[in-house]
Image (cartoon, rainbow, N blue to C red; front, side):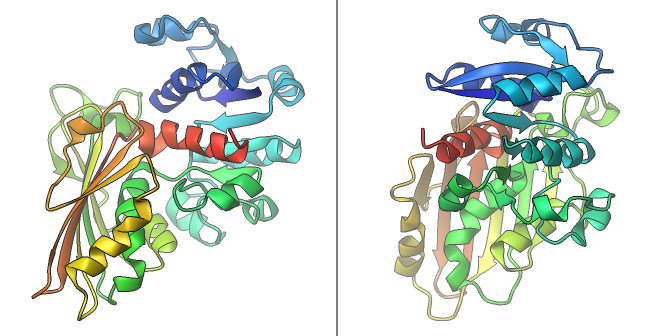
Length: 326
């Protein structure tokens, strides 16, 4: 039995992860935590999320006393916190010997030079960063098992990389073009005008400047053009990717490349059949659908995930179970 502390449990991802871990027979929840100045401290989780009324846990402030209690009692800590907050908390808990699963972007780049540009801070813990493993569960299981510092991927990168990584040896120098739409929960729980019921509308954002672009490119080993879109639905991501493959590539070659997922229970691959967001919402699954034109050499692959599940909480749970061999 492994004891897990969840910090940032009041947000959509933290609450979703709480529900997932609560349902696991081999995991227990050491505690749920929010910042000391949070308006949610002291509240039962079910007050914020009535659908979790079966989870009788309260949100505690992350005081120094609470941190000491986590170190004494927990086997691992999950950080569903802002990037700049995770930066420090991850390093501290790692130094105390706990396994850390960070859902922010604070440890996703191995190069410290990336952080000022994409996250607005200098990375102060290069020695911890050097130990961090990118937690793309289907691809990095051995590394996830071997380290105590796991950077859980972003939602768009998870959808995009799951679709593209099998094709790595077939790619040309042409940049894959990724157009992805996410539900509004991807913007977080805080009230914002553009995500309010009356204002939300399908629109691109972060054009040629979204921080997930270099995350995808780094892990793929290939530059990409990435354009995210905000959709007027709650949950889910659909990424439609157009990519040029090497001359002489056949449909059979593509099918063989995607056979890497034959033993991956959470990834479903279909040829000439494309996924829907509704088919993956509230599941830990990724659905891929692809079609290849041998004459032009262009492939279109669509990837559907739930942004709060496979794109965040359920992938964190995958990483936890891989790390602890559960």
